[in-house]
Length: 166
Length: 301
Image (cartoon, rainbow over all chains, first blue to last red; front, side):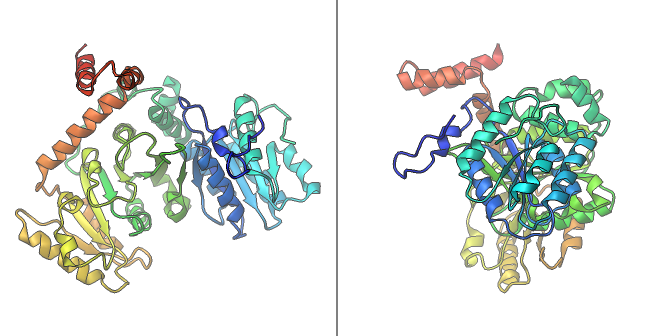
């Protein structure tokens, strides 16, 4: 489903992606692993998800992989969004995914964002990170990803599918 | 579902979290869960649930982090249900109470603490009433005390009285002149008041005004204490005071009034006929009185 443009502003109408009224909102953890302190991107994504009718749990800055995984577990989140702009993504993201699997949180769908060079992405997809969103991504694309992957039953971080958002 | 509840009983945190979601989404109910859990434990003589309320930005989350740390260190197992508002327009929510919580990341204390962020969803007050069921479930699992942090509330927001054994009102310094302390509302129902941010000017004076105001009323005045969550000042004495806090007893009638209203609202919101009745109301084929009567009758069926 492509996002229809907003009638007045000519921008994306986030309400088009709101879950059906009878559905319960999706719970999404937005996390900042590692030591970088740039969270504008994480906040923009959190806001877009909120405006689309989801419940977003923001972790705050500088969380360890262990802390993030425990947050996902205790908050019973369906999605985990990881944001990194420090260059440590190739170390931190796979570590989070591995810990999620160790904890048995295999059906959690993980996506990433920030400054992730093209060359690094394939390895992250191999770890079952289902999407990487760089700067300039329209928020509607992220909402589209959420909707598509939520409808799949094997897109979790410990599940069989090799699918990723392209 | 039943396997999930059993795993939660054995201490599995993920099953606990999933059962809370099921309660919140109404895919299971408290009666069913408690039925699986065996004999209920006898009620202890201290409080089991404490609501923490107060205006936005007075430092409720920060203060709670301090209190939770003290209690977890003493071996108590404490769960915090932190409520943030859902958008009335889209139904979405940004739940940010974790940002200020350091105790959930503490390598040894984290086992004694459970934090769950909750959105108000369709609820009309500062606390969705399903939180009462979540509290019962956590107590049945063996958590010692349950804290309920409400949405940053205004003067007239007293719904939390309906679901918690005790109410802690958190205030900040320089919150208006002495007349503010005399106004009716939330402060009347408080079992204890903490004036946070006492490192800033005006805190002592505000605490004095509150004490003076309570002194003019009947009954035992609630304790009024000063803390600075930022600097850790006064946290330990406040934590000790709160653990043994008695009900003020000044406002039993008012509390039961809130509980009654809350119960009534819940009957309406959870009625399977709600959708149909809203349609009929909109179509003019039913009056408000008819609806209330019909929902009352449903309870008796």
